Length: 314
Image (cartoon, rainbow, N blue to C red; front, side, top):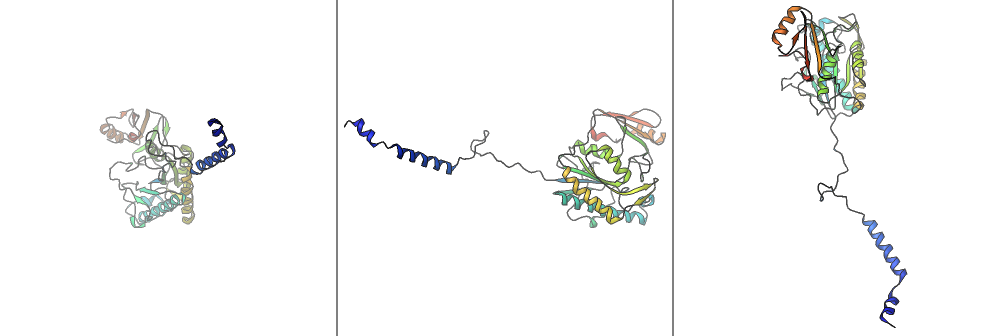
């Protein structure tokens, strides 16, 4: 028999088929290594996306706090004011609790009412942090690391009917304030500053008029109505336990708006118009604010594309 014939006699088709099946099974069992990154051939591509911590920034005011029902409680020389400070801490704590229940990882609060000496630190929720405003900016440490902001204790803008202690910045000096022809109050002002850092307004508590104003400016938004004004200087209160429950629930639900609620922004450049109550107030502003234009006896104007220039500051 020739050598060719001998080689053919050694070939076994069935055995080769079995060997091929075994080889395929071994390969399948071993699997394939992770595909390397095109930027670093030695490093596998990670399938995990870093999760951004949920940080909430709480801006506060006093007029819209639960239990505050008369003008006299704003007078810092009275017992009523000391009561209002305690009530402020209770509202803040309800919002902090709700935020954490909703999934927040960190909550920072800012004392924003009239000189910022209103907090009673010993009464603050243990997990909350106070922003000391170390940078001396009126928006303090708010920046783009936050996922959303709350406004606790809000009041409606100046000139709002049946709104408890309605005003914008100063009830003594300011008569009206508008941007691009639309009247604004402190809710929209703060929301635009937050929007400058990409932070949306998620939740507001205050009197009925303030919460309505929030819905007029922001969508979606969670609100907690804690009282209803009777004229300007008096209010009918929601019972404190119910008010705190409303704040806690609105804060909790608002965390789910992260990703849906958008930062509040306006068309730029924006035209800001501020009308004072008296011409002498405008005299002073015109003298000290060279970047603002005087329009008449009581009104100044500024056009800017910087959201952080929305207030008349030297």
